[in-house]
Length: 335
Image 1 (cartoon, rainbow, N blue to C red):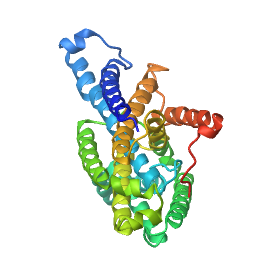
Image 2: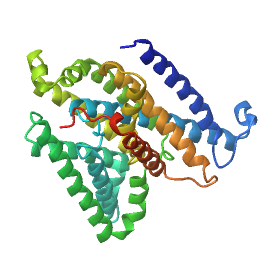
Image 3: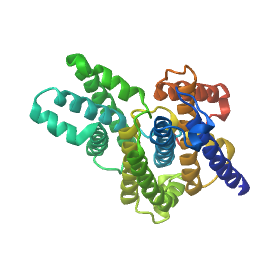
């Protein structure tokens, strides 16, 4: 194992993150000029410091959370096709938002309560509730296959309930489409701070639990022979996965393929242990989502593309390219 490759990749991703941050500040419907950095008028300062800076930082933070969650999911399930939404978090978040939007139109009392919770809170609670429902159906975390099947079932059922809600209450369709297509346009400094704190917490926990993922990569029997208490450690990893995914989805909506593609891109450059892989995948996820957000603002400026659509197109194209390469597509460990 070449120890210099992960270090070079780490430095490259950090430099690329800084460069994309500066580029993200310069891209927008109103353009950019040096006067905006040198002072400018009040409107220019508000655009720069209250919209573009937090949007770029929020895109990086959400992508970093999804990249981290993707690396944990693929290591936990020993499946290179696993993504952060595998346990039904995305469908649960969507249902939480749909229910909240319906409650907003029912009565003044429910509207007042719903406004206090907010779309972000509803999405997060929905994501966590979906993961808990998956764990309940799977009867814990002992059986990986049962957990995967439960996650698929929960995702399908809750997704169907979201579609049914939009069919029965058409008034919520426009707001739901904005959430389901993903957007970083409404991320402010408070959301950036929240995502940064959750990222630090999840990164620390995932790094401490990374030896478990290294053991699982050798097989469950080997991991047990090493003396690892797998049920408890699996539960801790699922908690990290749910917290990172729920926080990102609550702030930016459903962003596809970032959590799936980021670990693949890291592995294509450097083979390393899960401790390094989780950090590098997180940085890669931040770079991917920030780059996609810049493209979404620039391609049809002054209008914008939904960033979730762009990540789905680019991520899907990347996976198709991997499949076209044939034998190089990673398949070991699929359960």
